[in-house]
Each structure stands twice: as structure tokens, then as C-alpha cells.
Length: 372
Image 1 (tube, helix red, strand yellow):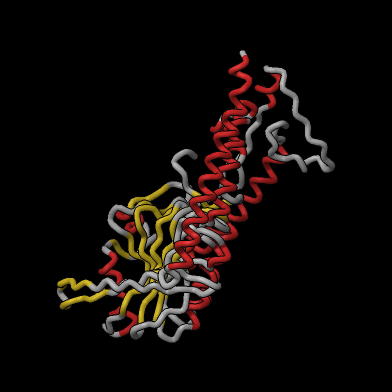
Image 2 (cartoon, rainbow, N blue to C red; image 1 turned 90 degrees about the vertical axis):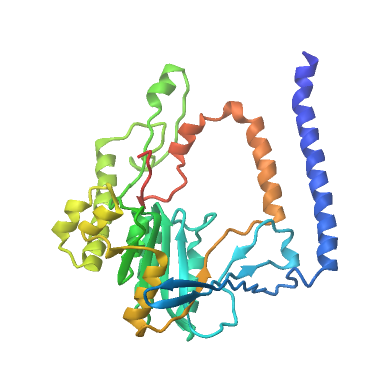
């Protein structure tokens, strides 16, 4: 009995010991970093490490050469120890004119592991102002995301298109909000194995646990003013009025989505709505239905853009992709939070229920999931 009581204290002691070791390791790393300052950025300076990867490919049009320049930013010393680098839109010495390969990957939300809204908008701004930049090819591999974020990215790309061309290439999945952003381009090509479409809206997900709570004698009450203020909370049933409210939100976002597609693809609204029932399409199906222009490889799209937009002039390709930047401090907080979650897991809701209550995507959403 006594050993069981002492177990939580032992766990806490082990956790603090582990954290102490991590902090000590960070101190060693800091000393190493100061000694080798030429390899690591310091004092707030941004480092652009440019990697050139030239390759020649034989095609019917001759030898095609591409260069990929990846810019990595190592944060300043004052920010602490960083486990991951971040590909950022930093000042780079270009070797002539170039086309930007701009990655739209992961869930389209304000901030995530592979997508960041501010980074994307800032990157488009800088590319527009850069005289060496001749155009953008979007590389889209995304299930979609927030209505707000997808539309904001779309509108910013449409502004860029007033002065420079935008093309889009679809990776394995360019669905819902991913397809929405692709509509900002004048030409869309998909890989032959792409899944796309999923034109529709999720206004929200509600979970009613009142029956289950009543069965087990669990009581939860939210004090609120306004009969719909607690709408969607798991401790109250959804009313018909609330369903109508959320349906109106979904309908308005759906009308915006189908309008964007109709304009981009030069289709009637009625024709788009026939296709826009939320389903996904293969590349062949999307081509037959007019949702994309062609099926092919990335290099084929690059050559096509150069021929159509620049009279066959070949340009370098420079990669612009985002990766989340994590500091030692954030990692430490995450470790402590994880331990605390484990210690209090007995009081938590089951993980599937937690995911439904807080699914991790902004609503309303242009989003595709196999679990819908």
C-alpha cells in the first residue's frame, strides 16, 4: 500500500531529474554554439544557406536544367536551442531570374507543422516585389482547412496574378481548401495519382453526451445568457434552431466555394454544383469534369509554363516551403505538459471523444477527411 502512494512522487522525481539532465545538455550545446559561431546564426542575424541541386533531363525539347535553392533560417542565440530549422522567405542572392515553387502542404490553418498563414502571405508579398521572380508554381498537397485561411490565401494569389503568372501542381491530395487555393492559378496540372475535389463545407461538429452523462450520473452545466450561447457544447442537446444556424453558415461558405470554382474553371454555377457534393475525384475524373487542365509530371508543368508564359525561356526553380520552428523552451514546456497530462489521464475524456470536441481544424472549414 505504501509503495503505491509513493509512486506518483517517484514519477515526479524522475521527471525533474530528466529535465535537469536536458537543461545541462542545453548548456553544453550553448557553449559549443558560441565556440563554433560560424556554423550557427547569432545576434538576430538571418542566415540563408543555399543548396544548389542542378540536374539535367533529356526530353523532346532538349536538355532541361533545374536548380532548387533551399533557404534555412537558424534563429538567434537569444531565442534558445532549436531542434528544427525553418525554410523561410529570406533575402537570397539569386543567380538570375527564377520561378518560385511555393509549397501548400498540410492542414490550411493559422499555424501548423508544415503550413503557416503569415509565412505564406509574407512570402507571396516578397515574391511579388522581387524583380528576379518571374512567377509561382504552387505545389499543393493538402486536405484543406479553414474557410478564412483558404480564402485569404486565394485572394492574395489573385493579387499576385495581376503582375505575374500563377500555375498549380497537385500532389497526392489537393482536396477541399487545397483545391480552393488551386483556383487562384491560371493552369492546374495533377499527378496521375492525385485525389482532388471534395468541394463542400463543414460548418462544425457537435457531440451530445447528455444521455451518456445522465446514465452514469455525471452532471455538467454551463451558465450562459442567450439561448444559443452554449450551442455545440457536449453538455446540452442541439436544437433545431441551432441546426438551422449552422446550416446557414455552411450554405453561405458553399456558395462562395462554388462561385470561386465556376469563375476559375469557366463553368456555370449549376455545372459546378452538380460536381460539388463533397466527393473526391481521381485525376482522370477531375480532368473529364473540367476541374483541372491536365495530368502530368512536375517537369512537364514547368516546361509548359516556360513555353506559354516566357516563350520557351528556361528559368531556375527555387523552393519556398515552411517548417515549424521549435525552441528548447517550447520543447521543455511540451514535455512538462505531456507528463502532467499523463498524471491526470484518469480524469480525462477518452481520446476519440476529445478529438471530436476539439478536432484541431478551424470551423467553418473546407476540409476533407476519410473519417467524415
